[in-house]
Image (cartoon, rainbow, N blue to C red; front, top):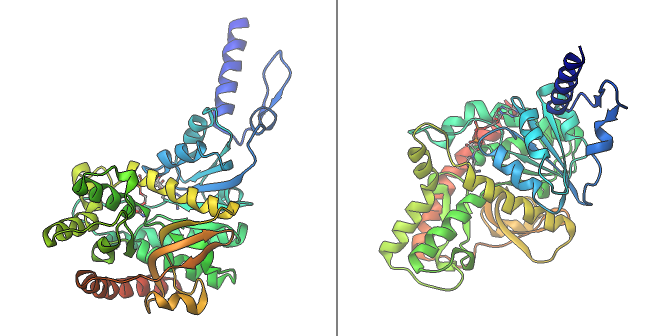
Length: 366
Ligand SMILES: NC(=O)c1ccc[n+]([C@@H]2O[C@H](COP(=O)([O-])OP(=O)(O)OC[C@H]3O[C@@H](n4cnc5c(N)ncnc54)[C@H](O)[C@@H]3O)[C@@H](O)[C@H]2O)c1
């Protein structure tokens, strides 16, 4: 009898732990414990961040790394599967952020309410032989629904879109926000950081440098030829032979495919992507905090700063170096002097990018 009660108590504790919506843990023979009292305290002062698609290949390591970020005080993990399992796991990390899990559409609004930054890695990844555009039919709808939730529950949040095809999903998000009357182009950013991370690594390999010392601007978009590394603007200043330029440009543009093929059907880049997403989210949070000189590449609206940004290209969205601040994108830098190889690459990139942007816009307007 005694033993049976013990077992029931243990099961009650475990199931309450795995399901955060069961806030009240009643343990026989002891005083009752409210989860909010024992877990939702001690959070460091900082920002509230939601990850949508938190149980996925990118979402899980991204959630773990954001739990380690000292600027984050509250971390909301949302997914349509396994959100509570990932939350229980990550919540045991002894870092400052308080973690809460949200499962399924009915909990989306709770996941989003009050957030400062929303990161979206929800959706399906590529399999060998697929382009990012092949993901459009599924991911477009997912991003649209999630952005409708953002428009309703945290319209002032900074939004980082990871779901592919980024060249179309960012325009989709913009159209949803416009429809809801809350669009602020400064707050919507497509995450192209992985292209920069790869470019820094591959260029450092060729130059025999530490990748942490190398900065390669990558502009355009986030698919194939739209990924345009500006090798003439690498820091520290250096030069490349034509053969090196072609090798590096091709490897940077096809870095994602390299991983998709190596994983042979088990998904696309997840770990390096989570690293890149956190590097980018951290920059956004430092900007929100008011740090000076936070500059990263991102796929943003060319209207983010009105006429000023027409210095970049005539396209409505383009990835370029941007300065991040309290309002999101505070400045969009011009492309700077391009060499002949980059000028040809830019024309190719613009041609493909225009179609992808239009596809995203018409998906919402249709
Ligand atoms: N921007 C980039 O540089 C970059 C790099 C790599 C991958 N990606 C993209 O990121 C996305 C995710 O990749 P992954 O490898 O993590 O995929 P994954 O399939 O491992 O994970 C996706 C997660 O999204 C969840 N999800 C599906 N529909 C959802 C919805 N409506 N609401 C909330 N969550 C939902 C799934 O349950 C899953 O947990 C893909 O679109 C992929 O192409 C982007």
